[in-house]
Amino acid sequence: MKKPKAIILRGTGTNCDIETRTSFSYVGADAELVHINELLAGKKKILDYDLMAFPGGFSYGDDISAGRIFAVKMARLAEDFGGFIKGGRPVIGICNGFQILVRTGFLPENRGDTQLSTLYTNDCGHFLAKWVKLKINKKSPCIFTKGLPEIIELPIAHGEGKFIMEDGKALARLLKMDLHAMTYVENPNGSMCDIAGITTATGTCFGLMPHPERNFFACQRPDRSSAVRDALAIGYEFFRNAVEYVR
Image (cartoon, rainbow, N blue to C red; front, side):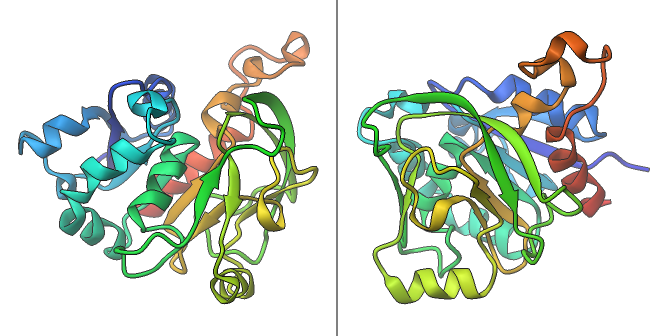
């Protein structure tokens, strides 16, 4: 069986690209690191791939706001990027990648030309790096969270993770459609409705602030002293689900 091709997009300041590529490779994808400038120069084509990932990190140093500069670059690829998403090919944005997806206007789901939400400075006013408990919305169409336990743990590492939607009707619609695929059990950053991750109605485009690639192997966990060597952790399921969906 041919391996699904995964494009792991990176830019200056991206720092979780190797872990994300490793995660997709481990579950059977042909994962390739591609710099955004390679797409802009036409050296690589988005539509040549089956899956897409925007990894975590601090793209372009978050100089304007988290993910903003990367999103501006992505706007020049809006037609191909929109076609990728509308074609039902899986897309995941993790942390900074989630910030990019909301600033391109593709999450929450809309026509792709309007930003309906943002990820703002944490209520505490500073960067947070900790493990958090998360609740999986079992009614969500999200393909990445399919079959996960109701409560899981993942690490977070962000300064701008507070999910905000000023349009109350749009937020109500998101909740009614169960597009809030993941919520915080104890909200660390002040996100509206405790939202930690959202998806599209098809369930194939997913953005989340926590890092599944950092809880892929049991040895990455705080209790790793008791972990069996090479044992898999819950983060593995996110990537496996996407690859199996393509297959």
